[in-house]
Amino acid sequence: MKAILAVSGFKNSGKTTLCLKLASCLRQMGVRVGFVKHTHENVVGETGTDTGRFLSENFPSLIWGPDGLRSEAKEEVTGPGRAVDCLLQEVDLVLLEGGKDLPLPRIWVGSPETSPEGIRGVLAWYVREGNRGESPSFVPGEEENLARFIAGRLGVGREEDSLNLEVDGKEVFLKPFLAVYLKESIQGMLRALKNTEGREITIRIRKGRETPGQA
Picture 1 (cartoon, rainbow, N blue to C red):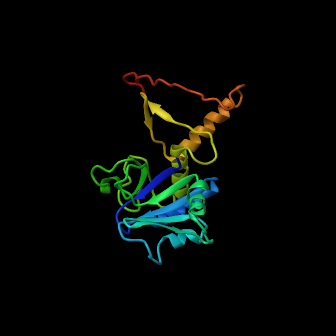
Picture 2: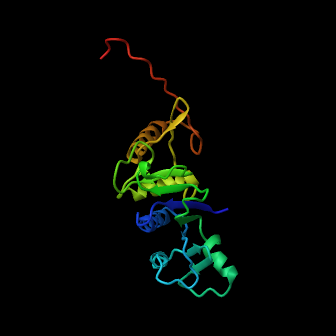
Picture 3: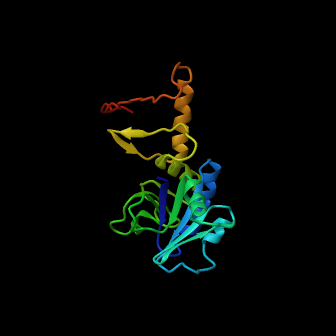
């Protein structure tokens, strides 16, 4: 089954723009991306849609509405088999714009406090304005970091070295620049060790309590 990531938020929150930026970043990482726009309006015969922006960048696109599906492609599609090939077989990840009620992993376009009660599957927030909070969140200008975060969580794209930090067994989210700094520092120290290539390495550190009066 193809990986599907919902990019959800309120109307005019910037979902399409974010999808396009993420699609471009992910493609540079070797991820083949498709785009689905989920709408509550009829789509059969609709013209002038957001998917045109994706088609201009050669991302296969699909509009999904209550009355059916519509495929949009720059090339002539002669039958359903070719449509399936374009939209499913040749992509690794589908970005689905909308779908806040669907049981999918998602990026919420907005700050954590704007997320509707009961929203499910939020991996991270894309905060254009307001408080970014302590949860995994990204702001404009950090789309490449968000794309790498998505690829890591969904397991798509070229395999890269990864680093996870846990405190008392609970994973702690690291800001991208800190994760890169720690990863490269630790890798530099481990290069002297033999037979570590391709292996999972665990480092455990137990912090002692400070002695009263200790600077």
